Amino acid sequence: MGVGKSCFKIVVALLLVIAFSLPASAQNVMADLSKESVIAKVVERNKLRVGFSTFVPWAMKDKNGEFVGFEIDVMKELAKDLGVEIEFVPTTWSGIIPALLADKFDVIIGGMSVTTQRNLKVNFSDPYDYTGIAMLASRKKGGDIKTLEDVNKAGVVVVARIGSTPAAAAKEYFPKAEVRLFEKETQCVQELMTGRATVMLASAPLPAFKAYEFPKKLFVPIKGTFTKEPIGFALRKGDPDTLNVLNNWVRLKHQSGWLKARKDYWFEGKEWESMLK
Image 1 (cartoon, helix red, strand yellow):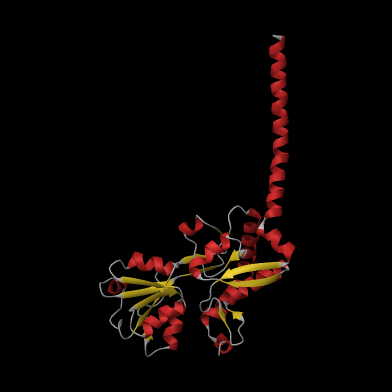
Image 2: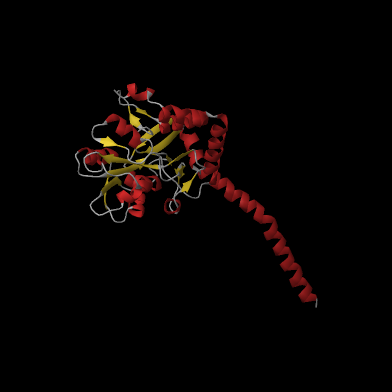
């Protein structure tokens, strides 16, 4: 009986030690995570490295070779609020997530739609924007297109950018058409201009801009967008501190109206065109 009580006391004592040590261990784990977070490293090195891919008017080069656009403004504003410098790392769209996972940069911004498949590889912040897929057509080959059903036919050639949500939508919405994918959106536009493709799928407002730029060869057969997609920052998994900072920054910029003002400037008008020519 005495031995049993002694064993019981020992067990209780051990359980109490474990119980009291768990919060301390948890705090240590959280402290280690905080030190290893991307945001901590960004502040320590005084530089935010941003992976992106160019497409109008999200990110593009001006006539002086500098990057400009809606998302360039977004990242410059974030870096300013963090009190750090910024480094833009142009990256091909098809390799942008692998480059992030390989620590080539700290965060992706590039009109990247939140999808379940992408979310298996990276974490996404709250949406700082919403976009949708629009259509651009060749007057030479797509003059009869008026509805989505007109595209889903044999003989129709649909082009889109590799690894993009428009590329996935092309295969989902138009299984009967021939889908051709290219590394750059400029290549897709060229396919339309030369009559080698019927329609191009791309995030708005690029189709409308290109139709305005080349009205004799291109047009928008279906007004507006036929999808709606949230756009977020993408970052490596296992980093709650950085995700928290980005989410709260997005909320603050939405509430202040700053994000809407910059979106309106780049998407609702074309005052910025003179910067490119």
